[in-house]
Image (cartoon, rainbow, N blue to C red; front, side):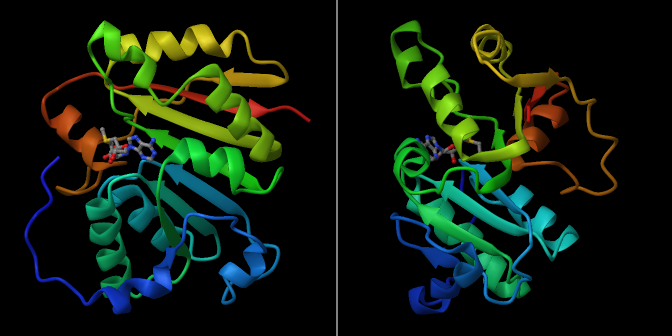
Length: 213
Ligand SMILES: C[S@@+](CC[C@H](N)C(=O)[O-])C[C@H]1O[C@@H](n2cnc3c(N)ncnc32)[C@H](O)[C@@H]1O
């Protein structure tokens, strides 16, 4: 993924939207401007942050957390958030597997978004794929009852691999969301990778998973 050159903001000015990789702690303190009963969503591997930027603007009373392993994308997305004055998103630079295993409180999240994870095409690299049974079990632990995991990819083989995992998960209900409607403008897509795939006419494969009460 290419990061467009654009004028950089000083690192200190990005600090209001950045969190260190460590325990998240009291979400009320992390998002002091939001109501204490706000819902909380987490995006894993947000890349350049299109979904976080659009969703946070559409839902200004929802808290959004994002974790992304590539610092250059974290800074790119943080720059957009600061420039747009968005106050309901916090970004963590780090490995999502470490983050969900160690740093987020149990039953604290309402929605987790996983969009277009790296496919690791070669068979010998499949073990590097982020979405494994253990990873999804960690996320289910972090969801409140009734919470949802949303997944999308343009890689059919990755989708099929996740389908095999889903049948092994207990206490969940799966559904298949429909495709997004036609974009109203050039950036009206769920994420940058969805945009690239759809502009090439590729199909998108999706599931939602609900944690049952
Ligand atoms: C194919 S890109 C998709 C980016 C974005 N979700 C989109 O749809 O435009 C996959 C993203 O996941 C990030 N990523 C890969 N492994 C990760 C990990 N272990 N923890 C957090 N982010 C990760 C990559 O750096 C990259 O930004």
